[in-house]
Image (tube, rainbow, N blue to C red; front, side, top):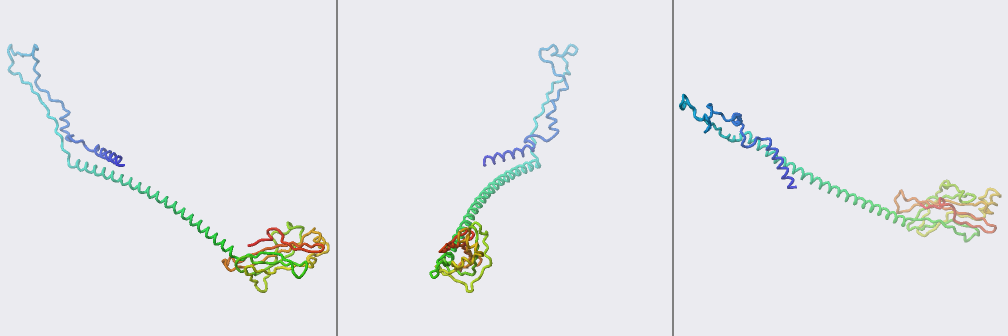
Length: 305
């Protein structure tokens, strides 16, 4: 950069000097005319050279007395004319302008370098900020997922099981058990019966009808259970509208499905996420001598939220 700067300054100085009159040149027009004029010749003819026939002029047979001497005129060389104050001021101004131009160019180069460095620093800062923001977002997302996992692990989960009645033969009870770690409050239940060829002919989504709230909210502590629905062999005939339908169920040509849904709340989740649902579905098997009730149905009939 130093060599380039000196070269640029020299070029500017040379341009400034070209526009000024050269040192030692005259500005007097009369002097210029004197320099361009040829030397004045003598008014008298030059004497003949020695040895020539006319070397000695004769006047009436004798030497001429009026013969004029030869004159040589020499013009002195022109003297340099000193610079005028106007030329000196103009030259000084050109030098000052050249110096100022050089300084301005150097300052411009320095400013451009600083701008380039600042742009590089800004890009690095922006990249670091982007990485930091992404890391913070991932950390917040991880914290949110961990928090949600903790909430899901600590919340109540109602699971459905079918147990035979210990007192009545061929009778069954659908039980809801809290398998979570916090209490659950059952706020509504519903159950329906549907006869279809098989589970693939059940309506999707399930038709649960209207939910019915229990007279008293049922609170289940972790590990506790409650009865949701009871069903016996005698009720198997009642769900069939005709004797022909009952014979088809007894011969397994049709299947009787008992399904329902439980709505409950927990105590640790936010208010908008406190309500959960558990859907369940069972297949009633009516045999010749004995009956059975087992969990069955498509996934839409066995969901947990």
